[in-house]
Image (cartoon, rainbow, N blue to C red; front, top):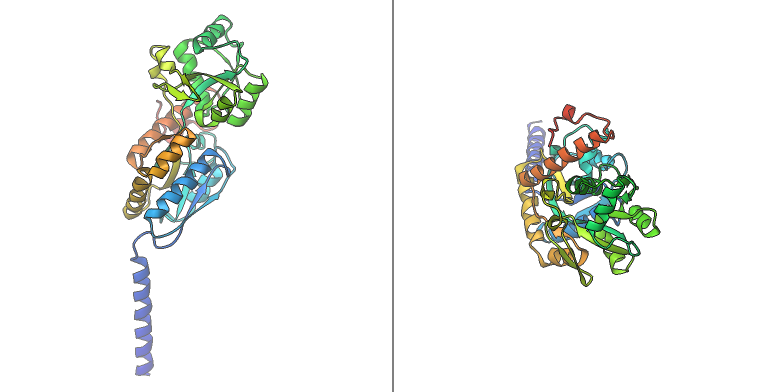
Length: 335
């Protein structure tokens, strides 16, 4: 009996030892999954697949990218990752558009639930159809001032970053356009080409092939800098209207996140791999080829950027009557 009990004790001790050894392994010791909240082939999906492939080079595991779409402002994907353990093995691929999920009733958390990593984004610009009579932003603005609310403008959905940029131009220039919402940037751009609207506000990455193909005519970048593209210089709207910096720039913030409650060792490992990936020639070349600006912020710095976007987006939606949840009830402060 003593011999049998002794063997059982040894076996139990070995089992505990093995368990301890596994739990003590450094993160990550198994593959990671990134669940992108938007569809395959879109900007957020493309950026996540690119950055995860580059980060894999600096981690001992693979990162598998899947798409978990649907809900309100990408809420299905965020809720899915929210319900996974905060051990860093399930990341969420997201963008600035997700900050509106809470005020639209998609989930019940402020965005600081996440510890985000920002790869970057593409700057917005105002363009018109190639056959438009407007050849400058000033001409377009003067026409809008002469007949307020008569010139139709596409900028994807209400409360999107493109819509907020349209509102910023209105506030900064004193013009008033007739906002026509579309379900995404592509339909809005198609509407401009078809003559359904007189102008469209989307990103340079999205408009690039249409500008190069002669279907859209760019009038102004909604950033402090002009851009040389397709053999022309697209001027900055900031050079045309004083005080525009009160409202702009509002930039895309595309990347991924882990739970804020994740262990510091998880954040450190992801941060190290992210820094090395962002500094790589691969990312620089990809960004240049696809008209993206590289960000590289993560942790508290990225949380601060997302907090400002969340505040701006939330209260803009509330002013538009499109918020189903009071931002203040979520602890979101006014901008």
